[in-house]
Image (cartoon, rainbow, N blue to C red):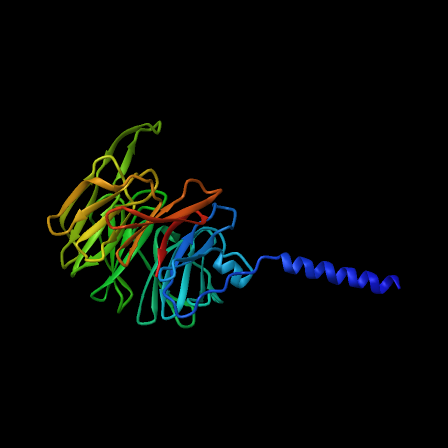
Length: 347
């Protein structure tokens, strides 16, 4: 009699544990989603992916881990969506994880990249900025998920843009410094030139056929690492030859890393990055910076979508960060808890 009783107790215990186990949230289907990259703490392998569904105002954290029963890896730098696939640049793991954009089911891993950062794609070819070997663009086949070529750039390539069959790459300097953008012919995969435009180019966008680059500027130190000065942060407008046509000084002693465009394409919002406080607006018609910030918070990342601003707070890299949703005047709509070290979103 003892044996059946023991079996019954075991089954009841198992059933109780399963009952107490929290049910994983199902991902909505046929809904627009924003893909939030949570870096995690460097060296801990705890990067994560959060999904936000703006129509339902629904947030789902740890979407990749819950779907695939494993971690993304170490430091999720950015996400990029192309042809129904979600590409996740996992910086410190030196890989790109690829999943179905809707279901987050894993499709494969692209390895043999060193410190991947950001991606753009066109005609089934993806271009990934990588800090390896001084600075490279890794070119991938987005269908079979293989590396097909690479092009050397300046040091520490960051954000990038495709325009008129050219790839323009911001060379942010990585662990050192740079002041150039790289221009690459995407038909031949050949470097055309590295063009000097300003200290630490970090972000790039095209608005009404005009290309803008955010140069972060830099802090100047003496041999004992005392601060002795700054080079100003600025917006640089490029001409048709991808050379500096005009520059607009933003801050003499502050160094933002990101910018994003308003819904009507008349304003650039500037902010985000280590040690930078606030979000500021730059009017594209008057070419002037509003020195009154629309937010005073210290965001790590910055994005815009559908008339809203998304600011990402990373107070430290040991606890969960927050996504702050604001209108374009800076009025806060909601504050949502995401993963550790959120730095931006793709969509």
